[in-house]
Image: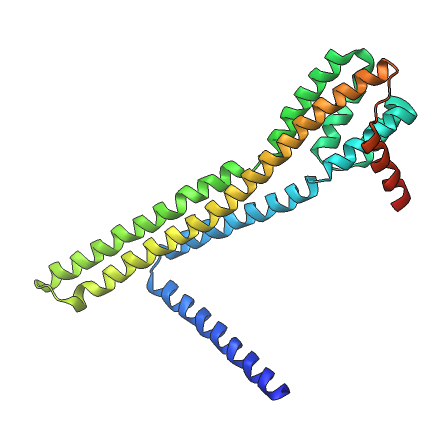
Length: 244
C-alpha cells in the first residue's frame, strides 16, 4: 500500500516536472517577445492578488453589522454606534461612521456625509483595476507583435534562400504561433481575475448603499424615540450576544 502510494506520487511529480520542462522549452522557442508577455502577466497577477486581499478584508457580514449598529443606537445612542463602527473594518463601517458623525446636524447632513464618503470608499475599492485592464489589453498586443516578428523572420528566410520549403519558414511560424498563444492565454487569465474583482466590488457597493439607507432610517427612528430593532433583529442581536 505504501509502495503504491509512493509510486503514484513519483509519477505525479515526474508528470509535473515534464510539463514544466515543456513550458520552459516552448517559452525559449517563442523568442524575445515572450518576456514582455510574461512580465505583463506577472504584474497583472500581482495587482489581482493585492485587490483580492484588500476586498476580502473589506468584506464583512453586513446584515449582522447593521443589527449591531441598530442595537448600539438603541442602547447607547450615536456615540455607542460610532465606537462600534470605529472598531469594525471595511467600507460599510467607515461610511456609517461618517454619517453618524454628522447625525447631530440633521438627517440631510448625515445623508450627504454618507454619499461623499461612499464615493471615496468606492475609489479605494476600484484602485488598481485600471492598471489590471491595461495589462489585459497589452498582453495580447505583445503576442500579436511577436506574431508579426515571426512572420517577418519566415519571409526573410525565404528571401535569403530564394526558395520556399517547410524547414525555412517553420522557425518563424513557430515563433508567431507561440507568442500569439502566450499573449492570448495571459489576457484570458487576467480578464477572469478582473471580472472577479469587479463582481466583488459591485456586491460591496450594493451592500454599502443598501446599508446606508437602513442607517438613515434608523437614525430617524431614534430621533423620534421609536423602537429601532424589529422582533427578528432583536432575536439576532440576542443570539450574537450569547455567542460572544
